[in-house]
Image (cartoon, rainbow, N blue to C red; front, side, top):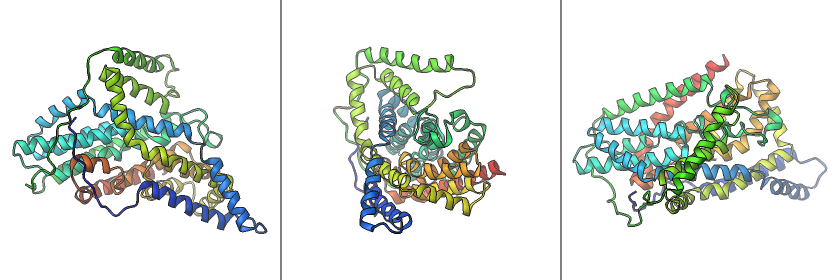
Length: 440
């Protein structure tokens, strides 16, 4: 893969770690105000709340590692030599602006549905390659629109095969099992309702891409010239990695054969990561090359590593202070069983602007939403999906996950936001109507 010179973008937005710290402070103050027992001294209760934060700090370690792995393994697949050769072939097929936009959007949506890390990286690389090939051929394309299409994977990821909340609640022993039990993916990811909503969304998004691509195509020059990396990752000689990869894939896929018919209880975060590991080893063949690809992916997982314990600390304060029960009671008072799924959707969409990590957001919002759902007798599977739709919707407005794409493509945030706002509006319509239809 070509190594692209990095470019700094001043988008006037605090870092995600700063947001995590800010949220910690806000929740700490809110808990002091609303849960402090009347006779207790403020300073002593403040120390007690801090101990709640400490108690919760390490409670999501397993979840943290799972989210790091799903990003790193997906990143590794996207930068493999085989995938890059495939990208080059697709780029050469796109000899018009319309083809460049639709091919990039379609591939990114499929990749993002399979794995969010894979979709995030492959969308950026494909958009970049589309720009390179067409610039060399002197074919005018709307490069900012192509780059925006390369970000569409983040519009479908949470309702896809690597969704944080949907896969987490499918695990035995997950942190909300005592509240909602275990929810198999057959009730969330693979439900008929979710499949229908995603299908309609993809059709609408491709239609929007078609209409946008028909606008006058800019002829601006292609940004940032490539620099070939001497240490480019390749699938080297040796087949030990491929042998191990085949073994891992065989073991993983055997679960479909030996499980009870229609029972997909094995399909969780660990299962997805197991398959991604096997596919990665199979593609790279050489163990050393595969390890190098993981090292490259780990750089992109730093934010998850440092932020998730702080989100777990927030969850600890909310849970152990009694604030969770108070919030649940408040939600019950202002909503009904018919409106709570929509409230879950809109609240997730808003909170995602401040907590861009779907897993971190679920750790904070999940307990409150699920407690409310159970009190009101609402199907928890539908609530989880409503949360997932809201979380992925505002990725089209939130610049955090777009940063890798901006760096790889050499485009600015404002150049893609003028197109992703259309994607956001489409998603708002499709998801909103889908949830309304579910509860009516």
